Length: 339
Image (cartoon, rainbow, N blue to C red; front, side, top):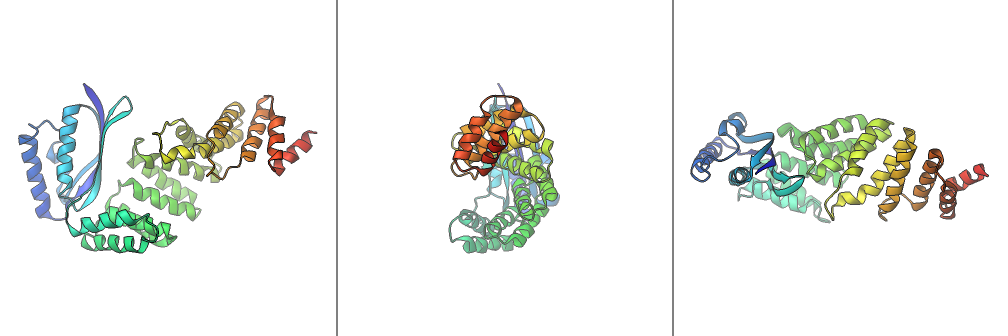
């Protein structure tokens, strides 16, 4: 039976000696361990000029055994790498049967310092230690795109936006298909209110990621925010419709953003004079109630009332009254104008 498989990423080996060794072992294991039942010829994925194994994006229908042989061989190769990240997926009708995120885990100093820094990025009070470890990884291997990206993330958390932007750009210069660096730099640009430039980076992030990854949907959501700031309603609606219609895995943090997405999708549809769908969006925003979001119940009721009124539906006055009772002055003003 054939299954959809997606494989993409890059592994860097740092020295010609290691690169030659990995290539030799790839050929040996492909023939002797897997009887050449793998998806790639070595000349298709080994890039001598970069001392790297590189798969921009591979999407095909394959047999499960062939996929698993390939994933196992790529995992073996990853342990010789000094930096990089490579993902493999096996999918059946949208269900993920197998997924691996391959990163080096050897005892090389650059690898160990990167892993240490990566583990400390979000630990309270450990940001300086994280930067120290990630800097040590970069000093050992100055093309370490992932270490630059993680150090940029720490700088962003510490609100050192200039340093974050510099490191994200450095990461991209060494791996121009690494989506996390584009996403991070776009967030810095959003902070700078440079929405057009942010959208360009979000678009690059989308091209370098797949819809199976959380970052793809985080990117869609914040990109829609940029379009809203620029009053690009059609483009914002496109991103938010995709986000709202997506079913996320149970427990995914993306699910908590559904209320935000439906609410803003509704406001955009009002701008586009699509009142019936706007009403449906506000109904969903109320269903996906998330106490951590900044959208108040009164605001949601007010907008639902506006959508009902413009769509020619009953019940809008009661929505305005309920919102006014919750302290919404704009709803109270609307009621006075109706009276």
